Length: 122
Image (cartoon, rainbow, N blue to C red):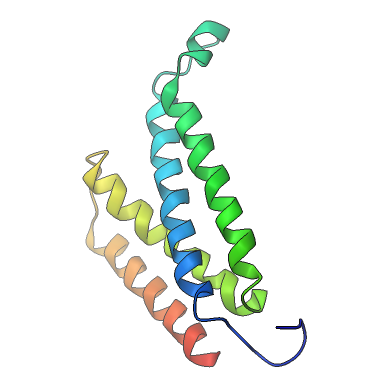
C-alpha cells in the first residue's frame, strides 16, 4: 500500500486498531484506579502498581496503533480509535462500578453509528 493511492485498507488493520483501543481503555481504567492512591511522595508513587500498568497498557496500545496505521490510510483507520470510548464505558461500569444513563448509552450508539459510516465510506 502506498500513501495517496486510493483507499486501500488491509483486512487486519481495523481489528488491530480496535484491539489497540481495548488496550488503551484498560490503561485508562488502571490510571483511574491509580489516581485514588496518588500522593506527593516518591515512595508511594513507585509503589503504585496500577500507575505502571496504566502506562504499560497505553504504551502497548500506541505500538499497536503504529502497526495498524501501516495497513491503511490514516483518515480511514484512525476514526476507529473512537471505539475506545465504548470500551471505557463498558469497563468503567464493570470494573469501577460507575453508572451509565440513557444519554451516555445514546452517545455510545452514536459512536458506533459514526464509525460504521466511516467504514462504509472506505
